[in-house]
Length: 161
Image (spheres, rainbow, N blue to C red):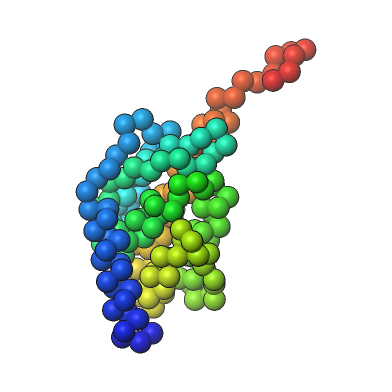
């Protein structure tokens, strides 16, 4: 990657990281997940509010992270609104594949900033930091789905649910 492109990514990464510097926790989230990267110590607390269809309607956060993890967190926090677990798993898997060196095409639109994570591909020790918010978001949606499933009313004998 040429120096001009790295500078562009670096500038955008810093701007994204600055966007999550102040905590923005939600007062009544559907689910909260806290994840920590053991290698660098970055951590994210992610609050999500979900609608009845399991789509994210609001995000809250507390991010204590390196520049890479903070930028990735900002991307997830902003782009996750409107997503369900299927879409977030797909995005997480694309980022993971890219970091492993696979050729991937990221979706544009709300996910266009994923491109700034490409330089992390060259530094294997940073992959966990880049993946942290994606893993947190998927974990949160999976926990929420499991909770909803556990709270469903089971059919009564002779009746219907």
